[in-house]
Image 1 (cartoon, rainbow, N blue to C red):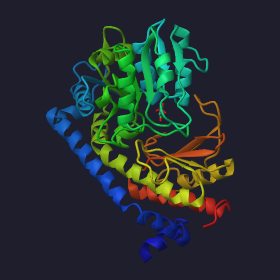
Image 2 (cartoon, helix red, strand yellow):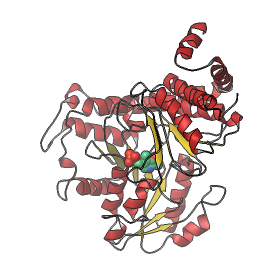
Image 3 (cartoon, rainbow, N blue to C red):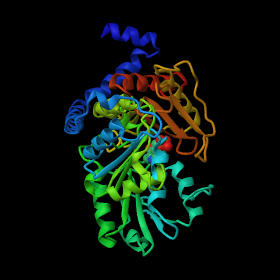
Image 4 (tube, rainbow, N blue to C red):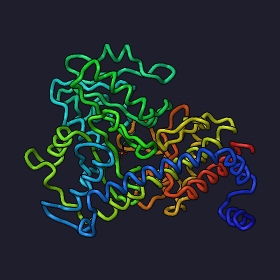
Length: 427
Ligand SMILES: *Cc1c(COP(=O)(O)O)cnc(C)c1O
């Protein structure tokens, strides 16, 4: 321990900050054990799916061109479908990011005259242009798809009566965002999502439900696809890529929905049959294999952050004691200066670009200036230790990731150190 403290001091972490962290950790033993149990279950689930689908060295071969009969790609999609307990899955490096996967799922399954409903308030920032809430060329609105929204009640619960009133003849698809994104509302558990889906389908049995599962994969033993979602959608540079996938997105769901997504991604008639894997199969398979333990480490980091910052008077969402349904931790820092200091600490703790200084700037798809700290092996990867947030009240920083729990811990300690050094926190 003496040795560790010395090393930490060379990295800028003071004994005071370190011991503040150790105090927080003493309270977390039982919770960390529970997280390890969930990871063990999910590890077995992924392993079983890989064995069942006979993953072999041949699956790792690179393909180019059209990619007809791509064994690796087709096997990976069956592995995902088995893990999510769905009929089909589309898992592709040609899906460039989470927003792309979500836009694909929506645009493939909504036709002119249809209505899209969000019963959980405003969707994630980048989805607003996809839908046309903020006007954009090629938005769903431009193609004649209308949008309705029911906000959450003040306590963060579903407004069932308003949702009942909003589901009408034109309601074709309901979109549910699991994670809070850049909002300080609660993240929903899979069980809560299941209740909401059951309610919506009791009113309109043929309505389609898509769940934005970004940051939620493997945090629980169940996924939204286990509780009635027709499409479960996410990014491979978040949880399911396990930090190794360099690009990609997935849509796991019913055969009918996934087929439409594939037609929209490539072309009508071609669908899932084309799309070369470009040599990415080893990292997509191995990343998915590692994802349950990587997610567990990231979740420990999030819980540690809440237990470090909340006693210092900063509001944390979720709070220090709450159960987790995603890997994101929001810490309301109250000022731009504190956001910058926090992000500097996360940046300084990175294995890559640790010498860079984050500052607020404009980002495509976001209305406010955003500050981002990330020193990742995969650019923009937020399963790796990262922090970001829009510069607007309550000046919340959204902290997530860490490929290992130990790295997450170092990053969080350094973030606190920067706040202390800037005179914004006194221990
Ligand atoms: C990250 C995220 C997205 C968008 O994913 P990108 O890969 O950044 O395009 C959508 N929804 C939620 C909830 C997210 O966290």
